[in-house]
Image 1 (cartoon, rainbow, N blue to C red):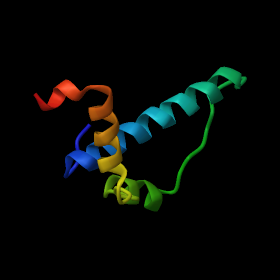
Image 2 (tube, rainbow, N blue to C red):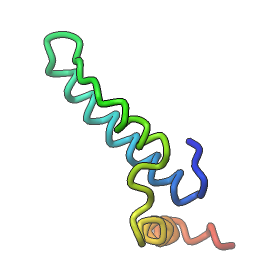
Image 3 (cartoon, one colour):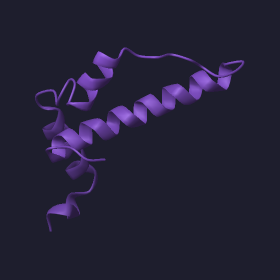
Image 4 (cartoon, one colour):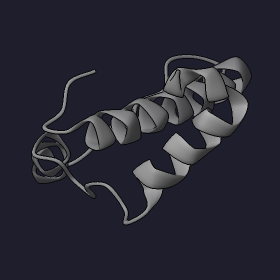
Length: 74
């Protein structure tokens, strides 16, 4: 995962994980290939950063990780 900042990379990774999970569920119940072409303008918007990183998203993720693994600060 690449992005201009660590926060943006984290956000993209979470989004990718969510999309993959939903795609797997959709594929599991489908009878054949699923075709859902998105408009080119939307795909380009996503490639350029799309929604970006919501305020506080990265900070909340860091706090959660530090609570789970306090030794990271050692």
